[in-house]
Amino acid sequence: MGESGNSRWQRKKDARPSEILDAALTLFVDKGYRATKMEDIAQAAGVTKGTPYLYFQNKEEIFKAVVRETIVARMQAMSAQLEQLQDASGSQLLHAALEDWWTHIGATRSAGLCKLMAAEATNFPELARFYYEEVIKPARQLLGHIVQRGMDRGEFRPANLEHVIDMLTAPMLMTMILSHSFGQVPGCCDSITRDPLGFLQSALRLTLQGLQYPVSQDLPS
Image 1 (spheres, rainbow, N blue to C red):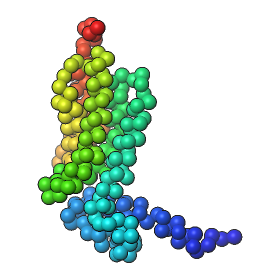
Image 2: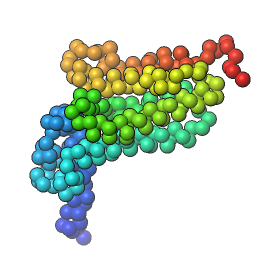
Image 3: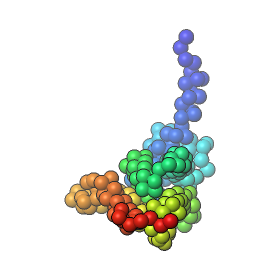
Image 4: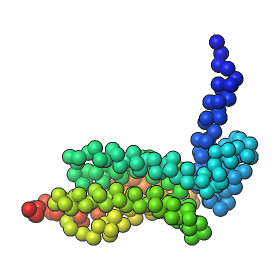
């Protein structure tokens, strides 16, 4: 027998939150947070004007849900995967983290949220604090854990941990921001936006060259 109308309606109803978040992500990245209205999100999602309010209290809650469903969820999965690689070196873990981040965040539309927050953080400090606590801080903790383990095992030289984290994250931030700003203008930032992953891998190799002991040098006991 054919599927009942009620079943189709229920399945469509269950899919609406994800459709709303997908539409909101596109609008936030393309228009910015301030310029995006709730009715714009509803229209882009193909639902009535009041439908988003059935699932989310306001635009701020939609934004937080977008961040959690995209960047935060992927970072949590990445962290769990890296925890299983107990025998991997610090260099291997950093390369694995970079490739996973690029595939699932950096090369996706959600990377545009970084540019959005850089541009609008001072206008919306509560959202900036949310983004810092749920995205930036956990990312720095993950990288710091890898680097500190490498130092403790004698793979990496002793160094200021916060500075090393800054050197690892700066190329990622720059790539996301430029890709969604100057990178959208033909002829601008071609050296990075033409091959962003290659740029990021080169930046990581240079950082690792500074962190690692020379091959000919005995590791500390």
